Picture 1 (cartoon, one colour):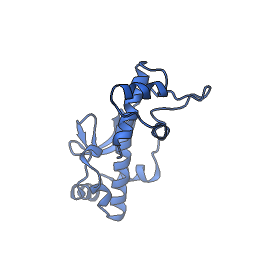
Picture 2: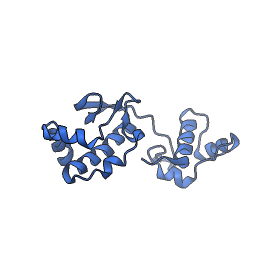
Picture 3: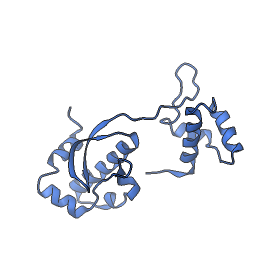
Picture 4: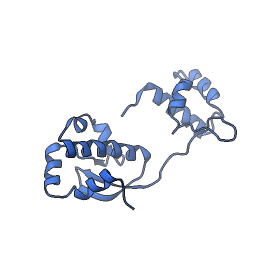
Length: 162
């Protein structure tokens, strides 16, 4: 997952806006510059609408609230193996699970391990470090051969049924 200095600067700016220390993106950029930080460019702000959605009435950038919405997802963790309907509480973790699920589906369908191998420790650590998504091809094949990933594949291949 991409990060980078631009995203970190945008997150700092969003934090200033959320806490009410500044009232606009321009004021936040000036405050960051005064504190010795390199402020995010307006292009970076536009690239991260999840941090800075536009107000429909005024067209000005606003700040999205912190997302603590619960999502129910199927995961395979090192600690608990297959977890059906596991609760994932942050958008960041949900995004990580989605990327991992796509890599797992690709591995199970094609046998290509490259997408799983490309995931870093940071990409597969969820729940504030309390759980790690399984990326070992040997263990995943064992679970698939035992039939434990059949429902998982059905849900992620055809879309979540509810």
